[in-house]
Amino acid sequence: MMKIEGKKINLRNVNVSDFSKIIQWHQNQLLTYLTGKKLPKNIEECNKRYLKKSLLHHILAIEDKNGNFLGEIEIRHIRWKEKIAELFIYIGEENLWGKGYGTEALSVFIDYIFNIKGFKTIYLRVYENNKRAIKCYEKCGFKKKGILRFKNQHDNLILMETTADAIKK
Image (cartoon, rainbow, N blue to C red; front, side, top):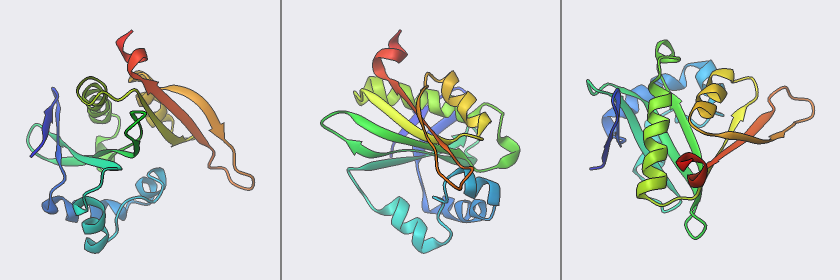
């Protein structure tokens, strides 16, 4: 079992016992929107997402120091030769947003990905109107690289990335 420790949080493998909370979080329309509708809505989808092993993605649970499951952090679309991956993170409990859990989880995870796993670049996509997440990403060293604008939609996506070299500076 994997465990990465921070000051306020730990990162660990997602457990079957976390599934009920994930399904509950799926009911939050704002969270579902902000996560790009990636949250599983039933046990079958949870089994498929969290129990299926893959070399192309790795998901960890975010928990507080009391062991309370708070959310998840993931790298996906891993390109092993280039050591590049896309990042996805969320805190499921809306009353915990803005409390620093996501920022610390991201910081601890980035340190692990770059310094232990040897990745070179991590990128992400975030909705332009998700100001809280953008602030968190910038605090953790991500820079805006571009924007995907969609005609007839107000949900533009900002592309952001950080590199191992940028973090070391």
